[in-house]
Image 1: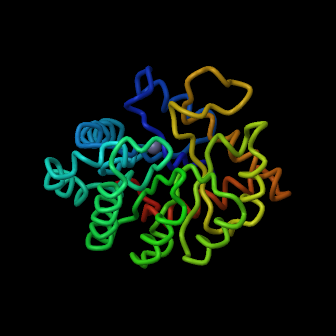
Image 2: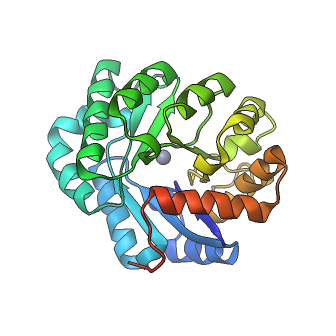
Amino acid sequence: MGWVDTHCHLFLVDQPATVLLDRAAAAGVDWLVCPGVDLETSLAARRLSAECGSRVRWSAGLHPHDATAWEATSARLRSLAVEADAVGECGLDYYRNLSDPEVQRAVFAAQLAMAAELGKPVIVHCRDAFADVHHAVEGAGLGEAVVLHCWTGGPRWTRRFADLGVTFSFAGPVTFPTGDTVRRAAAVVPPERTMVETDSPFLTPPPHRGAGNEPANVVAVGAALAEVWGVTLDAVAASTSATATRVFGVGASPR
Ligand SMILES: [Zn+2]
């Protein structure tokens, strides 16, 4: 079984998707999820999926940075989400606080409700906002359909979120020399509710730091989990891909 990159913004990578997908396939990546962050990029993600077939799954949603665009775009995002493989990425970002926190919370709640209503998984961005994301996710009661993307919480928050039955997705930070907290989180996470991602074009794992990230590098994230868990790379590929297949509702046969 190969790898699944559960979070890569292909439309932001400065290379043709076909080239990235070929390199990903050569590295053993079977399929990936391309999340939209606003209306325009959700449309771009849908276009890529239509062009590339079942190797590219996609989502429609509004990132907390742009939460103020909700009023103008929510109706179109909702109709896209009906077709999409997931809702998001959405969530709370109190690190950059590019949108008013109160607006962020309302728009996140609306997208959690949308995911529940449509029966879709929801891709969640959480930065410096653990308590409020926990509160919102607890209220939504979506279990493993909530995907905490690029998980960087420490062991305490990891346990609290794990108690809600959510799914974790690790990215480059678990490979970084500075990533001890994330690796301590990986040590307590339920492996059967854990996935891997690149968050391309961001967060490139070593030894390629400085270069743009791409889906092929998801294997480096998996290798970091293999080291923390004390299992083989193949075991991590099998377990994280099985989780991705279950969470994103991907059947054995291509769409
Ligand atoms: Zn993202």
